[in-house]
Every structure is written in C-alpha cells, then in structure tokens.
Length: 376
Ligand code: NAD
View 1 (cartoon, helix red, strand yellow):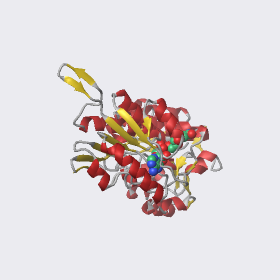
View 2 (tube, rainbow, N blue to C red):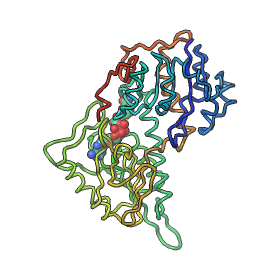
View 3 (tube, rainbow, N blue to C red):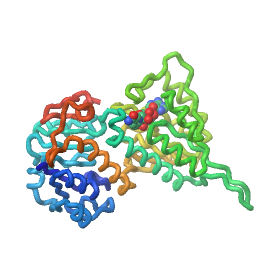
View 4 (cartoon, helix red, strand yellow):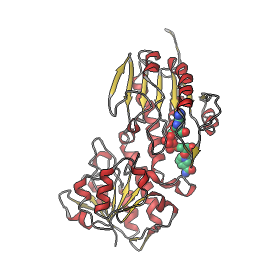
C-alpha cells in the first residue's frame, strides 16, 4: 500500500495545505494509506478531526519515522531541507517546487535520490486542465489583487451618483492578460471600474473585450512578440521601450495598476519604471503579483508596501495563500487528479512516459531531467 504524507507547510506565510479532508478521503478510497501531520490543515480551515473522519491518520510532526517511511509526499511549497533529507530513495515529492534557480533543492533531491514532480512544469494541454495548479492559484491571485487594491485605494471603484455629487469610476490598468490578469479584469469590472489591459499575445484582445475591458494596442514594430505553448516569450528591449512609452500615458491617468505579466522560467518584464511611477497620481496603487519573479514594477518587494511619490507599491506574490480554504481545495484537487490515474489497488505506479508526468518530472530517483530549468 502506498503511504502518502501530508505535511505541515513550513514556508513563511504559507497558509495552504496540500490535501484537504475530501482529497484524503479520495486517496483512502483508492486504497492508499494517508498520514497527516497534526494541525497541517489548521490555517486553511481543516482541523485534525475532519482528516480523521476522512480516514487520514494524524501523526505528530516530531515523528521522524513518518518522513522515513513515506512513499509519496504532497506539498504546497518545498519541505525543509531537514525533512527532505529523511526521505527514502525513490520517494516521490509532488508540489510547487519552484524549479527555477533553486540549486539547494536540486542538490537535496539528487543526493537523496528523490523523484520530484514540479507542478509548475505541467504541460498546458487539455488533458492537464484539472491538474493545472498555476491556473487555479493565479485565478485566486487575480481576484484578491483587485480586492486588495480597492481596500488600499483612496477612492471608490464604481461610479456613484449621490446628492453630494457624482463620483467618477476608478481607472484600473492590468498588465498581463493571462489567467490572473483576466480574473483581475472580471473582478475590477464587477466592482465598477474602467479597465484597460496590456498584453503581448494577440489572442488576449478579444478575451479582455469580452469582459468589457479595453485592450491597449501594441507598439507597431516589425518584430512581433512570440509565444510558445500558450506562454509569452520575452520581448526585445526595443519592443519593451515602445510598450512602456504607450503604458506611461495610461498609467498617468490610472488609479490602480495590477501587474501580472510573466515569462515562463525568466525574470518578469519591468513594465513600470521609476520615471513612470513619477507620472502616476499620488494615492494610486500598484499591486505587483510578479514580484517573486523580479516584479513588473521597479522597486516592489515581496510582502511590503512602499510609498514612492505618493504611489503605493505593493509586492503581493503570495495572494493565493490569503484565501487558504479555497486555494487548498483547488490545489488538492489538482494534485489528486494528476496521480489518480496511476493508482491501482492502493499502489501508486507513475508512468514516467505519460505526457503529464514526464512534463513535470524534475528528477527521476535523483537524476535531474530538466536541468535547464534550474539555471535561470
Ligand atoms: P503567465 O503567468 O506566464 O503570464 C501572464 C501574462 O503575461 C500572459 O498573458 C503573457 O502573455 C503576459 N505577458 C508576458 N510578457 C508581457 C509583456 N511584456 N507585456 C504584457 N504582458 C505580458 O501566463 P498564464 O496566465 O499562466 O497563461 C498563459 C496562457 O496559457 C493563457 O493564454 C492561458 O489561457 C493559457 N492557459 C492554457 C491552459 C490549457 O490549455 N490547459 C491552461 C491555463 C492557461
């Protein structure tokens, strides 16, 4: 019988858990044994009793045997070095392993001969949709970014006609119209704002217009930005400079900028620089979701609010964790949906030739398969 461990998340500020009681129930029904570290789900609204009722065995975090005996570890973020080093050869680690520039993790999984599946690397094909962690979490980030902006802004979002006068609607600029960006657009529209979107993939224009937002036209230069597998490629410095010139006008009139522009495995493009911040109005708010990839806005720092020229710059890379119940529920469904087809009579046997598994398999028993992703 495969032994699955659901550990307490130890990364600072992390409130999600990798499996909810209903995910545990599903894994039990498939015949696996599931061990849940005591209070692992506490911060996401799932207590030990709920896990016990779902068939999980609650184990104390001081019980090191549980790490030594685990066949599979579900996680949200990579577990601590000390816990990883207890895992046995061939154990499977499944989660958001932040494969980019993470040499420390690479060393541990190599030396301990761990098989690691990094959910960030899941191919974006139709069959993968139910396991798409980046989408489920980006959706939450986009929604929460707008709520955060609305609560930090010195103005209303909607237009209001009152006896004391008319309040004009807020203007929101969304940079990047992917999963997070489109959810930010939908949320800002629901709150009554006027929304503008910049993206370099032409398909985004129709998507943002269908949500009632306006697309900011791309600079007219010969070299068009590229894409691969649905992801944008990095733009040239010439393109970026022209794009920033266009954005300066929109940002100078904006109340809020929500930054979601990313390039897979690379630093995020800097779309708002210091000169552009200086042209924004004091009181405006910038929410930078790309902060952990270097940020779309110059000067943002993770989990910090910095005031520059009266503009609030908020580095918000961890927003999914601020909605831990739903974020964990969706995340756990993503993980179970990836491995369920490979469980038979309580035993997990991953088919490493399968497109989804080979896509996110970072290491096979310690042999790094996607070395390049560590180099960025
Ligand atoms: P992402 O997080 O990598 O990037 C966010 C957005 O930033 C993207 O739309 C990208 O085009 C944009 N961007 C990059 N450079 C930019 C720049 N210089 N200026 C402005 N915008 C810039 O992307 P994502 O949200 O993960 O989604 C990327 C695409 O994948 C979307 O089309 C999405 O619909 C698609 N997708 C497909 C599937 C599937 O088929 N299973 C699942 C999820 C997402």
